[in-house]
Length: 183
Image 1 (cartoon, rainbow, N blue to C red):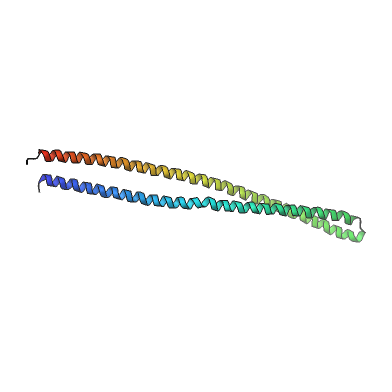
Image 2: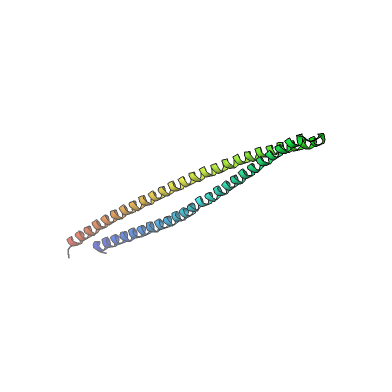
């Protein structure tokens, strides 16, 4: 086989290998882009779920506030009834004592409801902080991913430019070699 033919075959084989490598890089970038989009879609649903949770907790707090108000009114009514019963004979004093116990029990329940309300408020605040933190991390992750993709595209662009320049030098070298060979 003549040196020109052997050189042309090697150059052709090298260009085919380079084309295969670039195609593989393109396929991997497309697959990575699809995976990134899938993750982004799933992460975008997360804030809506967390917002629903926070909304439910806010409604629970409102219900507990209403219950607390009702308990306060019940306690006030019990205290008023206790005062009226104080004017009744001794027989009714026993009933007054029972009402006072109920008032104390109501006050205890009120305290418990307030404690639960505080706990729920703490949970809602924690959920809101967590949600804000997750949203911030999600946005930071999106920015990082976008930057990585831009860096990858830039590297590929530079690689293609280098390959094109090398290819141009190879073609120019082949033309010079073929021009110098005796005909």
